[in-house]
Length: 57
Image 1 (tube, rainbow, N blue to C red):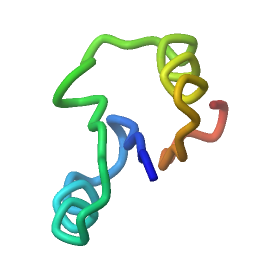
Image 2: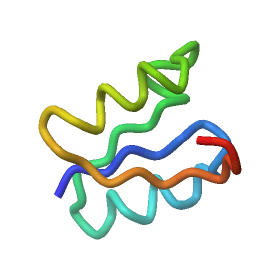
Image 3: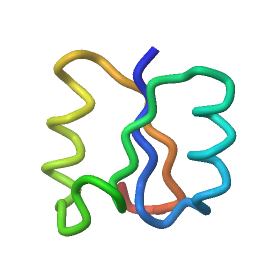
């Protein structure tokens, strides 16, 4: 399962998920200036789960 972690989420979750062998894309590492629309497009192909702390995403 592909997981995308938004830049507002504590990086601890990224490291822990990777230790559990999940495929994790960290927005802060790879796409620091991504908009919500950019992040949404990443979720669609291939489908992924997002972890975010934003109320308006």
